[in-house]
Amino acid sequence: PVTDVMILSNLPEAVEFNSTVVLTCSAKGSFTYKWMNGSVPLAVDGPRMNISQVGNVLNIAEVRRTDLRGPIFCIAENALESGRSAAFNLTVSCTYLITPTQA
View 1 (cartoon, rainbow, N blue to C red):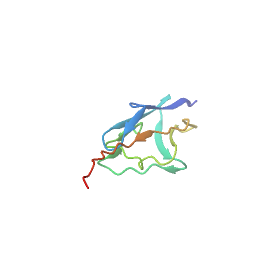
View 2: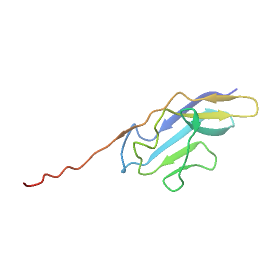
View 3: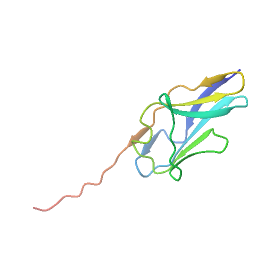
View 4: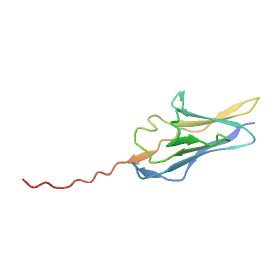
């Protein structure tokens, strides 16, 4: 059976453009993994966002608020069945540096 499918994050909250986020899909058993952004497969862009060869680790360098727009799910599956994690939402904070101007 597919049990205990969950997403683990290295950060509880990220800072836009400064944080690298590592999400790990964890499940009991031997599986293949899929990452979903809402109801569609997660699109990865290569150098900044990639999925490990095994498929259970998602790395996002210089995370942006627009990277993960919907809830993220991971799916662990074998030939007989599959299981889906609970929804995962990453909070990405944006910090802008505002410099005063002289009139």
